Image 1 (cartoon, rainbow, N blue to C red):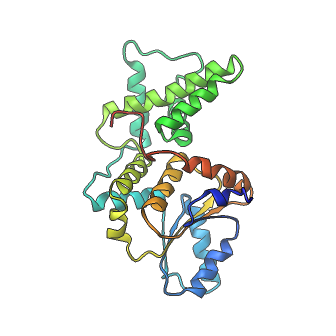
Image 2: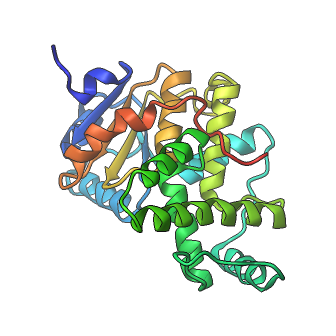
Length: 264
């Protein structure tokens, strides 16, 4: 029996390691098909566009964007706010939080606001603040040898609590990552209607240049694949591709993607 990662995925989701030439070839083989290219890193997006120019391949059938900008479009289509605070705002709020009476930091948790923001973003990247992933990571930290177990648990708790504290200080989204989570929930809640309302002419989606895959991007993929019949291709970078190919089925295997441990 074939136990490859591809066999564990929905039929409209295909994984690739390298093989970007296949994407370029489609522009020649299917000149009328419209493809949405999602590239989290702008440099990789520019590299693809450069290769299209050099090969004199028409670019009109491709639309280039990134997961956050796509999420903004989806949310704007249903009248949801897309206003976020930036990193400077977050650092200022974290600095203010640290100055409050009664604030205490566990031994393993840094005190510098920039380092605390890094703890928050790394926790977000790994878990997306999804309840199942937070619980799973907590169980993993508990299984580590002392004193690493306590240190890891303190860092996880700090990452979640910093996000919670920031949410209590603003009604805006904490970052564009939160917009991706919100768009994921809206896609699932509408059963794909918001996608069809603004992207009905899209024939394929490709997520390209992937050397790591944050939980929030896996959840967005989950929502697109679950609520549309559109083919979705993921192009991993060659170096980390084999590992990510094995990991992606587990990242997608979560109930209610986009859900968070917070009240709202």
